[in-house]
Image 1 (cartoon, one colour):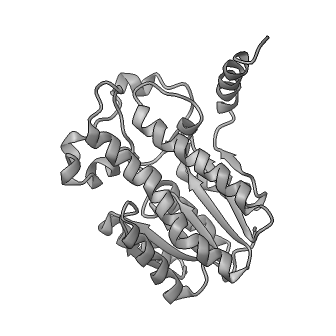
Image 2 (tube, helix red, strand yellow):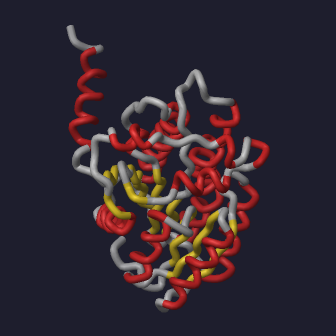
Length: 270
């Protein structure tokens, strides 16, 4: 799909970062927008900016970890705009720390949002996308960390590896249907995910005080270059237009993937 005129896109995590950048990019191609986010204030601001630019847009405060709220999001989208054609399961949170230092709450926070948020989105929207029969697209935001292990990202990697596997299965099952399926795998993108992850972490899971992030030294040691959320959104839309299963934001990730699969293949060496 490369013409979004009159089509409706639902974007979770839509109040900032890649989600908001994708919303602006889709609006420029004619899409009607439904933004979902836990951060009500940021969501209101995002909707206001898009509406000022002429977008048909609504915002629906949503905790994607809550299946009932995601179902309510689907109903709100259909009530306002009719059929939904694009679902960007984009909401995500960071989780940082050595596996032997992570708390149960760290694991639960990462899996609730990063994995169950995607599952809840698929459960709520896939039947609706199938039912109307028009071209449709589901994009699940994983991460390059869903393809390659990273120190101190055990919980995050586990959640994103699961999203990759889930999406590959969905892609296989949707072949020959009206629903295209893609995995967005960002590497380093300038977003405020660390701040929003802390701000939105529930009190029962430790709240902001329990949230950890990289030190300045660890951040400086990262091996790739940051790109903007707008650049990531343009890569996303190109990948969707080409119906790519895997949409990577950084070509520099290719050698890392190659090394990983070479290590796997050595297990079969005679």
